[in-house]
Length: 269
Image (cartoon, rainbow, N blue to C red; front, side, top):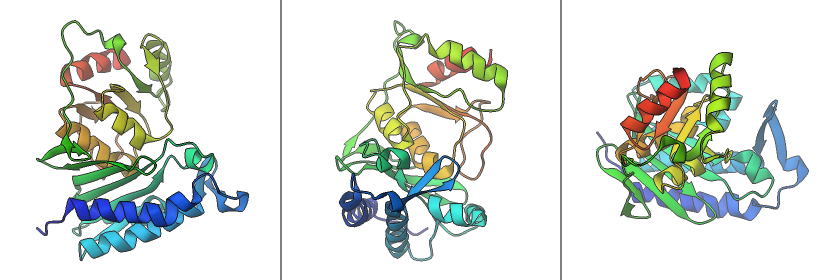
């Protein structure tokens, strides 16, 4: 298996940000923002970032291919690349596009490397603070070179002391109503509208829990591996592992397995 330099990938992300994202932040014109689907925005910066990263990443790992959010929007069949034998870079060029279009700083660049359907490395980069979280399977998670570990909850900690985002979407209406009632009991329920920023906050213990119903691989493949490598718990609500090749139900995140089990019981009874 060809190895890669995680620092080369980080440098490629920073290079793309400096060339394509930063010059446009807070300066987009109306004609540079459009809907690719109802309520789903894309900007010229998203497209330029993805084009730049596609070229850089495939140079770093010869023989690799990409699955980018914007290329999938144009051609959904590209998702099938995740089922092949070639190493795949999953690219979210600007996570939090709606935030970006408004000049909101809660944005991120997310990259994951997938081999044989399994995430083996991931990067979450804050383009405005230049902070990067990096993970490799079996090697831990690091934020700007410092290893990050998520502490287990203490016996004195109530699960309701936690904060994060418990989304109440999905097709199960009874479950959605339970979630709405449950989340009022927590210290804070906040939707950052940027999954990458939520993963960074979970790794820093600024938030502790999350529940997402739409789990696209460009949003979640890197971050889930980061949390697991840092000692956290992240599984489908039915208890099965997250895999980037499947969208098999809601994803529940907690700082440890005991908290995950307790939260899952609250949600699904």
